[in-house]
Image (cartoon, rainbow, N blue to C red):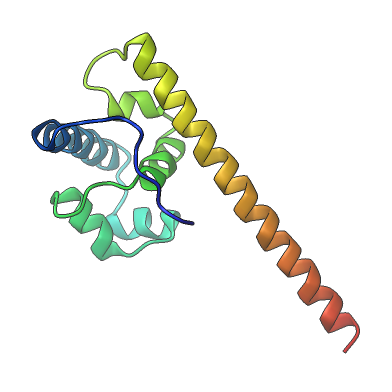
Length: 126
């Protein structure tokens, strides 16, 4: 899946604070659920090293990872991303981002399903 930039415009300092806030919430959620970094990595289809780098703020969290973690922890993305209750504009932007990610994921799943069907037909004709 191709990574897309978050549509929210932030200065570098605001982005660091934004990422730090996400980081604290996600570490707290991981510990509350008693999940290991390995479990999180396996669930998200990434490496333990990436999870470690996200938590240590070496890499920023990609939106697809934030989206996956919101599903794992069963919390809204706004809970993870927003330091306080989001404004109407922030909610709208977050909803647009989630919709975009959902469309992208659905498109990827359809491509995978098509490829699997083609492989299945090829094997049955073999």
